[in-house]
Image 1 (tube, rainbow, N blue to C red):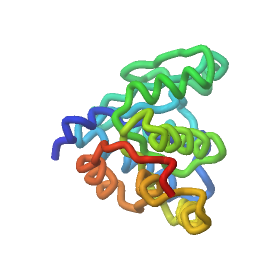
Image 2: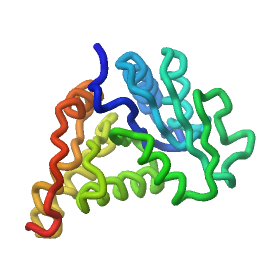
Image 3: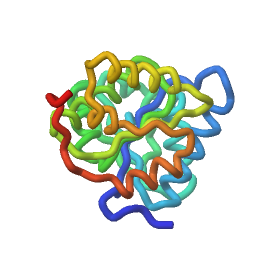
Image 4: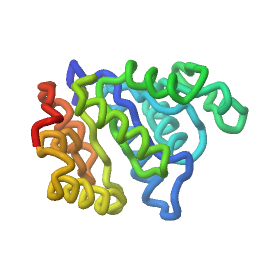
Length: 195
């Protein structure tokens, strides 16, 4: 099955660690393969470590395009992945995120730590503000994002987030369902100020 013509590359945010349970790496590899099989390029942080490396290696092994974006200070030999389709070396973290966003037609978050969440929340905020209209999804491997989804719903209940802004983020344990939703994504901007 081919990818949606408007979704040629997806930015994947995920951990530079692999987590404690084996299913995190197994599912991350499945996501990398799935993207490659659908003809969708992977854009990610350029590392060879943790889930980042797992996604990149799986996509490459399946014949996919993988673009890494890494700041100079992380270019140490043990961190940077040197087997990618393209490796963009940038000055700093701000340029890294802007470059990743500009190269991508959508965003997927897999399990990760503070950096993964920071990247996720930034692109979600940009969507709220109408700075882009690209789909944002979380692959809920083993229930990793379930409590975050509950907290996001709590933000709505407490009046700090409107429903259209909540609906900018899709959480699903099935990456196939997420990619299918991305293909149907409506790029209409939301009104952040309407609660």
